[in-house]
Image: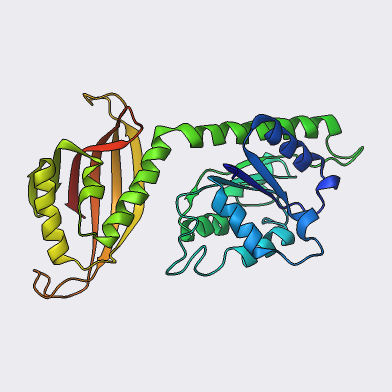
Length: 323
C-alpha cells in the first residue's frame, strides 16, 4: 500500500524532459510513493481497470501528473479516467470508494505565464481550464487541492528554453508537489476536513446508537440548533432522539462551503473555528412536525473544535442557524 499514488499521463515519458525531471524529483523526496506510467502500461494495451482501481483504493494522496495538451489532459490520461472512474466506484449511489482521498493535479505547461489570462493569447487562467477535473474530484467525493503547475516547461533546441533550465524547473516543480503533499498528510486543517466528511456521513445514516458522535463531542459541549439549546452528552442525546424521530435514515448532507481558521480565543491548544454551509435533504416521518413531507433546508454552522493529544477532533460547541 502506497500513501502517494502518481498517475503519469504523458504519452511518451522518455521523450519528456520536464515530466521526467518532475517524477525523478518526486521519487527522491517521497518514500512511500508509487508511480504508474500509463505510457508503458497501456499505450497499446487495454486498461486493467481492476488493477488501477486497487491502486487508487490503496492510496491516501492521488496525483495526476501530465503535460497540458490543448488545455486539458493527454488522450491517454483521458482514456484512463473514462474507464477507471466507473459508476458505483467513483460516483453513483454506491460510488464512494474514493471519498476523502486527497486529489492533486501536477501539470507541466509549455507556454509562458503571461499568456494565461484575459490579456494573453490563451485568454483564460490555467485553473479555469481545469474546472472539469475539479468537478470530477467533487463528484467522486475527493478532496480537491489547488493545482500545481509550472510554465515554460518545453525545450526546443535553439528555439525555446535551455535543457538545463527545463530540468531545473522540473526539479523545483517536484519539490513544490512534495512539499504540498507533506502539508496534506500532516496539517490539522485537512484532518478537520476529513472529519467533517465522516461526521455528516454518519449523520446521513442516523444510527440507533449515538456513541459514534459522543466520542467526538466534549463532555461540556454546547449544542445550539433551531430546536433549542442542549448541553453535554445528555443534552446531545436528547437532541439526537428528536432527530431520529423526525428524519428517516439515508439523509443527504451536502457540504457546500467550509472555512477553517485558528481559534485565537480558544482555552484549549490546537483550537479551530469551522464555518460551514450545509444543504440537507431528508424524508421525514408522518408523526413528525413535517408530517412525512420531504424537506430540503440550507443552514450555516459554526463549530469550535480542538485536536486532542490523540489527534482526535473534539467539538466544543456546535451552532446551527437557518439561512
